[in-house]
Image 1 (spheres, rainbow, N blue to C red):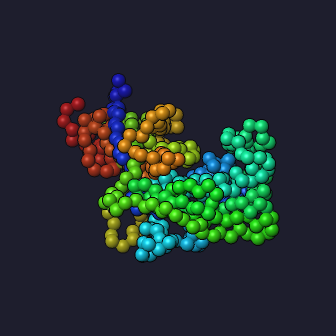
Image 2: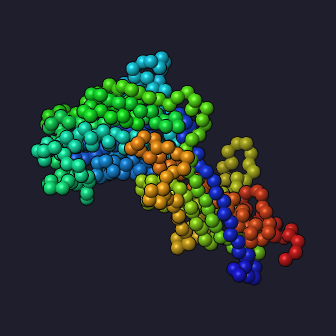
Image 3: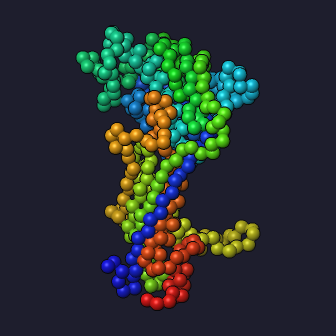
Length: 405
């Protein structure tokens, strides 16, 4: 019914799995609380446009009640105090199988957010909770939680992060934590017995800084002794990839007699796990769609000499403009989410505290656009085009060569 006159209408779908992690991935991260309550985060990640700075700044909210106002990325000198090395032998006290991984867009949400959250957990448990106990003058009740940026408990005065920070610095509680993580089908774990109530954490190295009693000196980081270090067994070395996210594109196109193809409706369906920052996710989905449409419909490198072709510019290499993307009211994003109480089939929890619902999407946001467009053109016209891009000239030639109506 949508096809009429010189316009044919069709719908196409395509989906794929994004694999991320190399089954041997390492990351550094840290969090620090200043005397006036300002939070800062550091990480071995680098922002290449994948939104690492935003994702890591909001990764502090769950444990510390608010987002970090400062983010330092890629400064590896900040982690020298952890005292670890990948050098053999593996029996050395500070040995780790891998010091750091290269940075890729799909690494941020899983590996680096996990590391930041673990550093926040240490700061919360060994810095903020002791400070709250001091300020409340009693043992901590069982319902301590964050509400509106304040640490609250029944019958207790709400505490601001600034008040907690001031007390933590004066009482020499933990005011900063830096961690190292290693992942190979699961995170390595270790215990740190010098911290009160030592627990097994999904990190394999930890350094903490304590307050200086209200003096002006900057906190100094010192490595914590680790025990019961548990790395994945040798059998997982054969696993190439163990982490996946899924995405699909459902696209509607109009194919004109001139050969022009216009995408008029688009639905992006993806399993992004737990979303750290909704606006970044939406931007990544819309940007991936636009990039995918460019690859599908117009972007083609013209033949040129082996040397640099100085005449190659946007007058010859066409990229999508806003007119090539469906209007916002025709762009839909559908997330795959777990129902309450639903388990993740085939996936164990990384630790009893940390379910595996962080996922990297990265280039998957554009990967299935081109095959979905190709399927939509085939649905509209009966023509199966097999070479990208499906530009106006190639589509018109295919239409001209078609026999019958």
